[in-house]
Image (cartoon, rainbow, N blue to C red; front, side, top):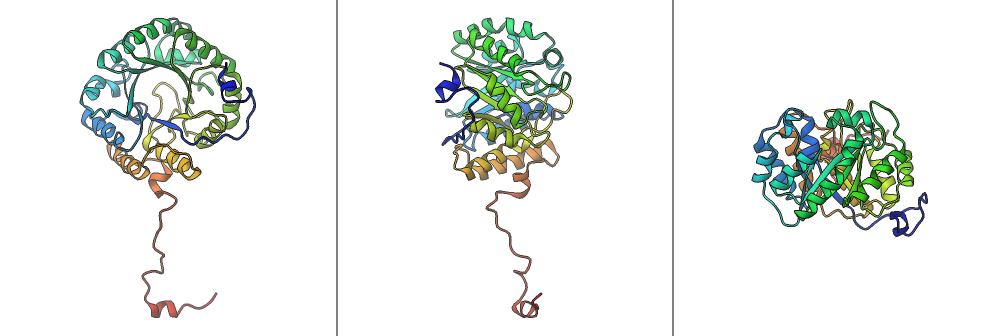
Length: 331
């Protein structure tokens, strides 16, 4: 039975679907900080520990990549060894290849994400190999993970478009999903690497996918469409999403890959819709303030700047005494 059939409707059928709960994976410690100037190890640990106290159930903590290519992640093993591990949180690490996956498993991770791009050009820029070469090692990677009682998620970068190649055919993404399922991966994720996704592109992609694997969406807000894309996916039955506190993040190997959707904006919107996330919004906003302090620049999250919609402010006239108020004339 395919994924859409399991949801009780056919592929291409887009009725309204609002779940009671969604699962969010926080990616700021990895996807967020990899796009900033190198942050001290102690600050990375502070950020992960703070996120662990917000009610988040999933955190992408580090990536095991070449320190020459991504110096921001050179201390991955050191960071992971020092963070406070909470039993109710699923921590994961990203890796680009067999060597990175092995390092993640050796460090003690039981959830590993392998990234492969739907774009040949981006895959070579990001990983230094062809898409076929990345897919060829998938079965061995999944077998290694099973031996270590770990799971593998395949993240498909540039699923909604590539800054080098332009539009990406959904059928090309679907073929990678098929390869991931055949190799024994436990789930797939679709990355909007440079914020090229729109609700139409989300619909087109989901129309092309037929899989039993759980699916996750990773949206960037580069062009202001992330929340609209998330709602479109939600209406189609997707209940797993990535987000980054403060909206930090991007890809060093993709021009224009800025602005992950901010976790506090996603939580703020979903909670007002009656969709539970398990996350304490106030604690999350405080953690976004910490992230802003760590990166040393103002972050673009609207909820971080303005606070929740329920925030009340004193009227400008509230400090006027009664005599002043009494002198006001009707307009």
